[in-house]
Image 1 (cartoon, rainbow, N blue to C red):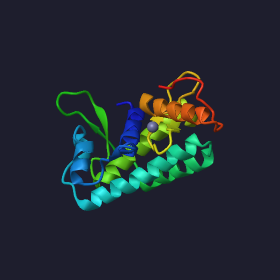
Image 2 (image 1 turned 90 degrees about the horizontal axis):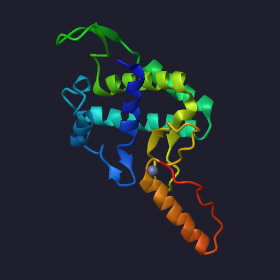
Image 3 (image 1 turned 45 degrees about the horizontal axis):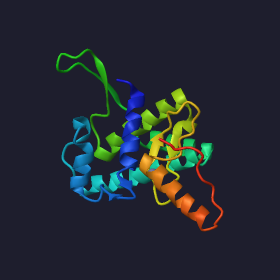
Length: 187
Ligand SMILES: [Zn+2]
């Protein structure tokens, strides 16, 4: 198991809220998020939903601080998550697989999710750098991403956000309001 792949859990959770709406509003939304991750599922209660929504805010802040260049703040917040949700590794060899690592089989759903997401982010940052964590710069969009471009130029979560930002900038330009038009289309 590549621990850095757990960093995707952070992205998936933060991006349950975007300009189109919030898919983590109820227990069905939480079930949908955990659907493909049986190790994180189990009986789901309202307090799990509350915990996951709180965790979502904490993770979003880490990305926002990193994207704004507030490195120390981003690292402090992540280190706090790592302390709050320690990893409890277990070797497992079920279903004829080779011995492999499982993390935090016990504990609440938010606790298990947080331990994996925080460990994944920590490994990702130590392998690739904090400036790989990005937050969409489009107005009204809070989505986050890992910037995998060679020169770290990604600014938007999607073509959609890049597109509507350049349309808005072009509109401002034609109406005489000074605006910076993005030089290139982002992924
Ligand atoms: Zn966006």
